[in-house]
Image (cartoon, rainbow, N blue to C red; front, side):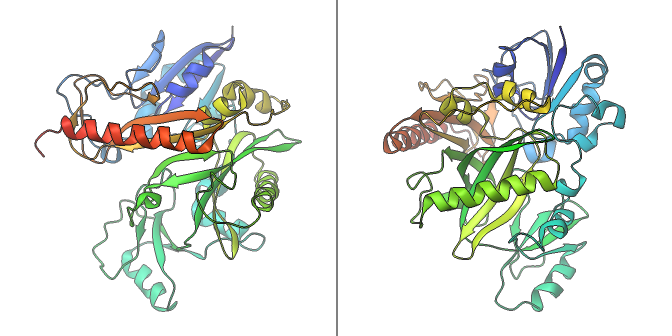
Length: 393
C-alpha cells in the first residue's frame, strides 16, 4: 500500500477524506482539534490541554517547524500533499518530486512576480515592491486619490494586510512587502482542477473576509459560500451567468499560464470595472468540505486523480454550502457547545485568546435563505457561549 503524507496548518478535513482512500496515511499539522481523526502516523505541534492557552497563531506558527518534525515521514512516504501553511518551495528538490499538486510556485507565491506576469493580460491592482514604510509613502504621494494596502510578498489567509493610512508606525513583520492599489468590491474565488493537458473549473464561490463583516481594516479569511448564484453573491449584480463564465475563462487561462496541477484556487475582486485577479492559491482550498457537501464527491480523491492525469466528470451542485470561521470575541475557556454544524473544535477546557480562530461552522441546504439563517444563528450562539465562558482579559 502506498504511503501518503498530509502536511499543513490543519489537516482535519483532508484526513477525513484520505481515510476513505486506499493509502497508508501520515499527517503533520499545527492545530490539534478535538474532532481531528486520530491515526497511528500523526504529529501535532499545538498540544491543547485544560487551562492552557493556545496562544497566538500568527506569532507561534512557522512552516519550518512542520517540516522539521516531519523529516522521517517525508523520507518514508511515497506522496506528499501540502495544505495551507506549507509551500512546495519549502521542500528539497528531491522531496518535491513526491508532491501531488502544483510544485512550480515561485512566480505564484511571490505576489510581485505574479503581478508582473499577469498585468499585461489580466485586470489586476497596480502593485509595487517595497522594502520599508517610507518607500510606501513616497509612492503614495505620486498617486493622489488612490488608496493602497500593504501585503507581505508571500503570505496567505489575509494576515498582515494593512490599509496605508497617514500613520508611519506600521510594523512590517517581513523585510519584503508589496504596496498594492486597494480595490473595493465583492470578494470571489474560483476552484479548478487541472492535468498537464486539461483544465476544468470546479465551482465559483463567494469569498468572505472579516472586512465583509464590518471590520474595516482586516482582510483575514473567514469562509466561503457556494455555488456562486445571484443569492449567494450577497450583492446586487448584473448577469450572474456572465460573471461565472468570465471567472471560468480567466481561471482556466491562468491555470494554463502557470502550469497548475490538481486542485487550485484563484481569488478575485468584482466591481464596476470588472474582475480583478488578486492571487492564485496553488493548493487545496478552504472550500474543500463545502465542495464535498455540494457535489457529493471526495475532493482529495479528485485532486489525486487530476495530479495523475485523470479529470473526473464533475457533477452539478446538489445544494448550497456555507463555511464560516469564528474568531473568538474574547479570551475564553472552551466548553462543549450543543450544535451539530461546528467543526475544528478546541479541546474541552483549553483557552482560546481573543481574535484567535475558535471553530468553524459548515452547513448545507438546497434553500439558500435557510442555510444562511442556520449558519448565522450558529454564529450568534458560538459568540454568545464565548462571552459566557470569558476569562479576565
